[in-house]
Length: 105
Image (cartoon, rainbow, N blue to C red; front, side, top):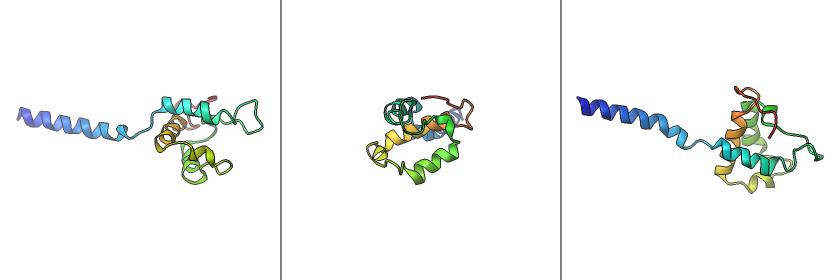
């Protein structure tokens, strides 16, 4: 009986941890945002300033799913799938409808 209890506990623990293994890393996403997005979308450029808190999670999802930076698609093309996941995770974490909306990069 004790072995069964341990086995069930381990299975539950692994099943809860599994989804996070595929999630992006928001800290890496923050660095990507600063290196890639802020090079054009800062106060010193002609482009519109962009912050994670400018859009809701749904709006950022649409941007990644549909728009894919249509104005300058090479930005997305040079990033790996994992980089895009990390960037999206950062934007989600500090989106307008998150617990801590971001105001700057």
